[in-house]
Every structure is written in C-alpha cells, then in structure tokens.
Amino acid sequence: MRLIALSTLKAFWVRHPDAKQPLLAWHEEVKHTDWQSPTDVKAEFGSASILQDGRVVFSIAGNKYRLVAWINYPYRVVYIRFIGSHRQYDQIDAQNI
Image (cartoon, rainbow, N blue to C red; front, side, top):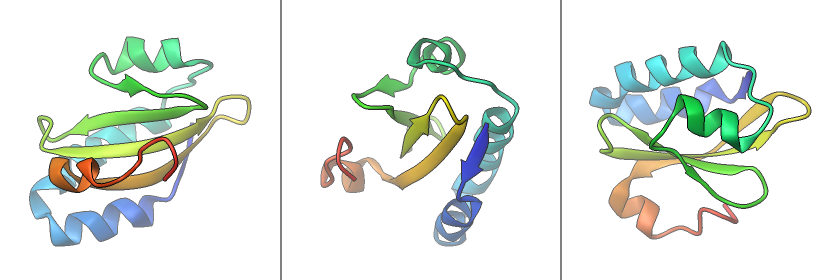
C-alpha cells in the first residue's frame, strides 16, 4: 500500500516522541500490505475499527493514540486523515475528517 503522508506522522511524533516507534512500526507494516477490503485490514489489525466509506481507526502505542485513515482499496492508497490522543479523537467526527 502507498501511504499519504508520512510527513503527518513525523509532525505528530515530534510533539509526542513516545509515538515515534509505534508509528514507524505501523507505517512499515502498512506499506508492505496489499489490502483489498476492510476484511483484510481487520485480519491484520484486529483492534482496528472499520467505519463507512473506507475509513478505519487504528490504535497506536497500546491504544494511547488514535489514527484515522481513509483507504482507497482499488488504488492501494492509505490516506492519513487524523492522528491524536483519545481525547482529541473524541472531539472529531472520524467519519468526516
């Protein structure tokens, strides 16, 4: 899968250094996958929450942070839409961000 954009993750881990290694691990795993459906995501990341229209919420760093991605399965692209703490996540609409 192609990931857009790593710069979003980097900007986050500059402010939250404890998230760097978990985000790098997530990034490495995602870029070497070939998800064709939400079922494939769930098989690899059992704790992921599948939303509508290709949105997926991933738990990062032992569920300390949340990452919302929009996945375009036909084009094999993962767009990072949000990364933040649970508190920040609770203040957004993950389906529309």
